[in-house]
Structure formats: C-alpha cells, structure tokens
Image 1 (cartoon, rainbow, N blue to C red):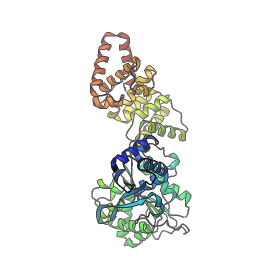
Image 2 (image 1 turned 60 degrees about the horizontal axis):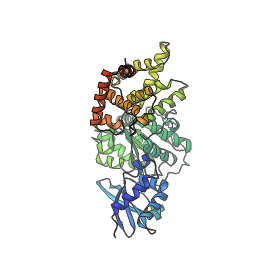
Image 3 (image 1 turned 135 degrees about the vertical axis):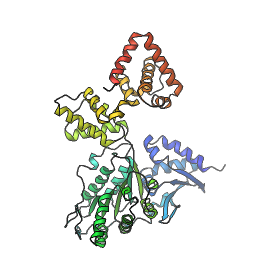
Image 4 (image 1 turned 90 degrees about the vertical axis):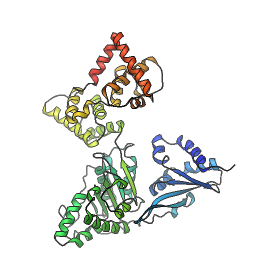
Length: 476
C-alpha cells in the first residue's frame, strides 16, 4: 500500500513529540510542512535556511531514525527551503537538499566570511557621534549576552544572535532582523551581538547606530557635499547594527543610500543586524527592493516574556545590583507588569528609590502602592495568574494542582474561588478564565461563580476566606 506523505509526517511528528521538549517541538517542528514522498524520499518544507541548518545540527539523528522507522531502511529526507529568488520577485522558490549531502548547501545570497586580518579603518570624515581616528562601536557593555535572560519569548532570536556573534557574515542569517514591541529587548540583543563579535574578533570594525542617527548623518553629508565619503565610510564597516529600521519609512533618499550600503556589505560577506517594531511584511512606506533584502536572512521575533522569565529577569537585575527583595514582592511585580521588560525593570528601580527616599522597608503593601502609581489604570486589573497564585498560597496548594484535572474537594474549591475572583476582578472572558484553570469551559466557570456566591451567603468561615483573599488581591 502506497503511503501518503502527510500521514507519514504526522506519524513521524508523534514520535518526535515524545523525544523533545514541548517548546522545542513548537519552535522547530510545528512550522514544518510535508510536501511529497517519492521513491522512499520524504520532502519537507521549512521556513528558512536557518531552520534547515538548525535541524541538521541538532535533530538530524532523531529525524533519520524516525523517517527510517516509518518508511524503511532506504528512507531519505529532503528539505524544501522557501527563499527570495531576487529583489524584484516576491515568489518563493524551492531548494532541495538531501540529508546525505549537507556540505553542498550554499545560500546564493551569503558570501564567505571576511578576512579579519585588516587593521581598524580610519574614519574618512567627521560624522557626529563618531571618533575621527578609530571608529567607536557605540556599544553599551551592560547589554551583553550574560545579562540577557533566555526564555521561550526570545530563544530563537537569542540563538540566532549568538550564532552571528560567533561567525559574523558566515551564517545563513545575514541580515538578521530582530523585531518586536517596545521594551522587549531588541536593543539589548543587538548590543550583545556587537559585544560578542568585538570580543571574539577584535580586528573587526563593529558599529551600532540608530536609524535616526544614520538619517541625520546622511542629511549632514548631503548639505556638506560629502555623500560619497558617507557611503564609503559605511561600506568599510565589518558589522553594521542598525536599530529601528522602520524609521526609514517614507524617507526615499535615505532608503536609497542604505540600499547601496546594504548591497555592498552583504556582497562582501559583512554582517548586518537590523531591528524593527514589526516584521518586513507589515512595514509601510519602505521600498520593495529593501524589504526583499530584509527577508534574505532570518527574521526573528521577540515576544512578551512569560511569568517565569519575568521573575528571572527581576532576579538577574537584583543580583547584578546587589539588591535583596522579599520573594512575594518580586512575584507581585512579575505578575502585575507583564507586557514590557523595560517597564518591569523601571518598576523595580522606582520601588527601591521610593523605599530609600522615604526610609521605608520594601513590603508587599509598598509594592502595591507603587505599582498602582507606576502603571496607573492598568494595575487596577489583577491578572488571572496572580489571582491563582494568591489563592494557592492562601490554601497552601501547588498551582500545578489547581490547573490539573483532579476532583479533590479542597482543590475544586480553591479552583472555584480563583474563577470567582478572576471574573470579578479582570476583564477576561469566561472561556479565557476556564482555559487558565485546567482547560474548563465557560459553563464550568459560571457554575463555579454561582457555587462561591451561594457558599458565601450560607457559610461564615467560607465568607471569611473570601474577605481575606479580597484584601490580599485588592490594590490600594
């Protein structure tokens, strides 16, 4: 019986899922699509060359064993990699690579690494913010990889950045475009890459510059008839790190000059790292030829950090600053500020400053007062996660137990109370509340709220539980 390529790959995935972590599975295997199977050769499509290289480096043995188990001892795997054909076409083309010939892979848009034996270049003319003799990299030494906490939110971007730092211009992800919302660590990661390259390749000329600074320098060069010097200077940089490229939107002349600089650097095997607040496909006011080049390498997003990562970030910051805070204060900060790392660190600094200036000990009450002022109206809505944490602490239950399927009386009651407060104190839908409490549906949440209301009217001790919890949850 002839096997269908989709069913073959589905069976392979079920085996792979049991042999890797859930996050690794979601990151590296869910985006893969099966294309066809012919002559015991399974072809799978991966989103980028970076994916291909990562799979070959980290999961090739697992893939080989799984494919052979499903198809037979002669089974082979081919990759179909979606790339940009050229600057004028947005139609992807496919490159197929058998796993037995990984050395043969060459990305037509990636040149060989630059010879690092050159002396540091001299600045051909004075650009505001740059030294005249040796180029100042403009890197912040505090923004290193060591200070960048890794989590599910940034693992792909951080891994790619680390690879670039170890082999600038010699990986498939050139350019590396890092995108994400405000305060999620784009600038930190960019500086980390630059610092990593400077440490490993001290002879390379690394330059970090914001797109706004780049634009102002270009305007000055045009005024002073130094445009050729400006272009020549940037074309001699070994590693160019440009922050917030979306600032180029609508500036045709700046985009044009950056296009020529980009081409020269890329063709000579030099590394480009760009950041943006959105992926290339969503950038407005940018020339198509430039957007096409942004897609040549890897576009990696930075997402909002999860609770564990936020706590780790705070602990890292406290350790580096020599600060010690009560565990409940750290957890409250991490639960209350969930969308922005910069805001999270700012809240920590504000709390310490307020404690120092007013000569008050840092307590949970002080943290609540400060958070209310710091994030204003948003702090009045407590998160579902925080409600669950407070309820579990109150009844001395592990939070995993609340989210499990167990029907033990004390766990069910704690779960119902958490649902009750989540409905009362957040704007979340019933379905969302249920999803946070062990995958329950909206009807279960409604039933829980009715049960809690009824018990509060008939049971005095239960009513006292609710009063105590409400005091703990309320932000004064």
